[in-house]
Image (cartoon, rainbow, N blue to C red; front, side, top):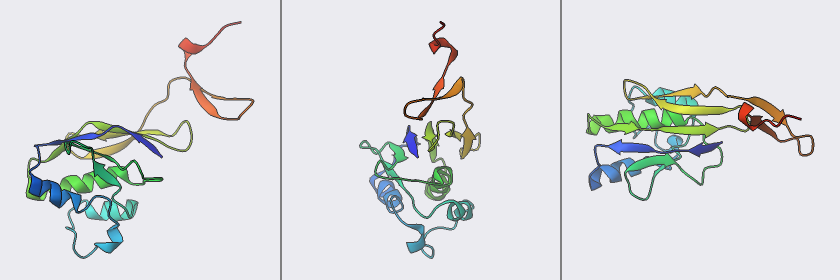
Length: 151
């Protein structure tokens, strides 16, 4: 999976809040089952993934999928768990923006989209154009009408 985009954190976090959140990022859930908060989003997270493969960007104002992650699963559930944990400390904690997820196949494109309640939903992106297979390398790509060449 490849990910593009990052989610803006608001309100701006204090150093103690950054340290608290950093304690979850990059961790394996199985190592912390007894100590991490069991919010209403915890079970969804456990069902989706074992790792919190998310990190701050350099400014500590955004969260993004860890660039070193090869196959992150459950990014929506991960972000929702982070929101639920941080709302216990900061009731008005929010993440805004979206992340685009590209799967292994050309037609596997999803958007991690914010809902009205502040949590995220995993939504399949509708493709525009035809999926074309290259006769030489067999790679697939999307061809939109404006890029067609007529004979």
